[in-house]
Length: 163
Image (cartoon, rainbow, N blue to C red):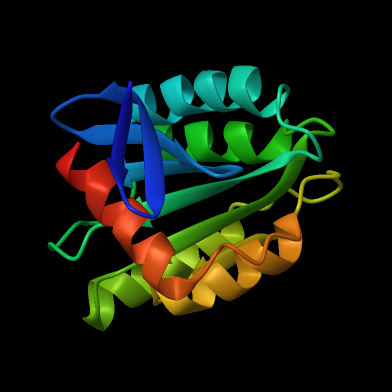
């Protein structure tokens, strides 16, 4: 299903009370609506693989942690995140996390996300960002896509969140 708002077209793949999985251009978005979960991570991993394998030139994956206060992931969720990051395949051009929140909890979440890169894997390094502008610059470079701008990415995230 597609949702359009010129010039951004976002395809919603799955929506639950806890998360939304959507795609925009060659970027898959996992937008949390609350605390992260093993189910959301595993489901988005499966959706990403099936979708990304069909993208010419590969694709990137963006996790969006909401502004609302969320705690760091529990051990089971961390293990699921590590599994997802360690088995990307050749179609994976990059993984990033946008932590929109500020303060101590946000800093803790950023630190945990940086530790998820398993040693000795071929997975792309984690990229942790604070703003859509930072993510857009990263994604535009990784995907070699000048159409990825801060304004369009922010709109794609908003549309996915409202899904």
